[in-house]
Image 1 (cartoon, rainbow, N blue to C red):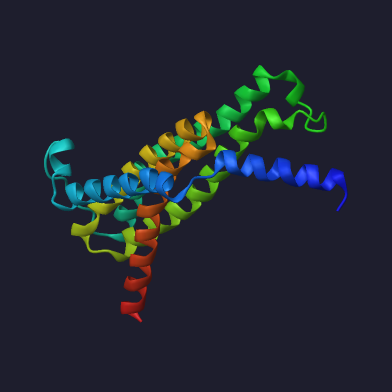
Image 2 (tube, rainbow, N blue to C red; image 1 turned 180 degrees about the horizontal axis):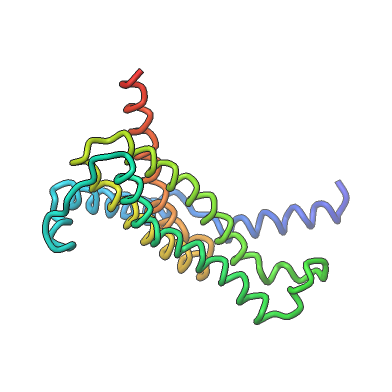
Length: 196
């Protein structure tokens, strides 16, 4: 190998070491995040959430009512996407040299662009999982839609704040976003399998 390629390789390894965790460090972030999602899910599953929203609500019965219910709640996850888009736009305002994508200054937008990209990916998974769940689940299970929306919104904010501080700190927000979404996805797979 040439000295240039070895230099690039050593820089890449040192950059990776700065953003990676040892196993005990990772557990400090991952286990409390999973535990907090599980605690919030338990809280919601025991109908304590109704106290937060002023008592029992009428549960939508028809498919159209269920979709309307979901789309009303999806304002909050969509707001996180709009905020991420505005965050990239504000970076372009703050750093005029980034307005031309060919100028070589795109590194100034890297964190904001990654937050936006991850938000789009997670929102797509979340929205599809919640819509399918709302159509397949029993009416008394629809409180999980509220929990999924709550967890997604909290998770995106935590992801944004953590990633803005340092890429290492994005883990709790990612878990708050990803774990409930994937739980709904796999539960939807079970519901679909039972129907056929």
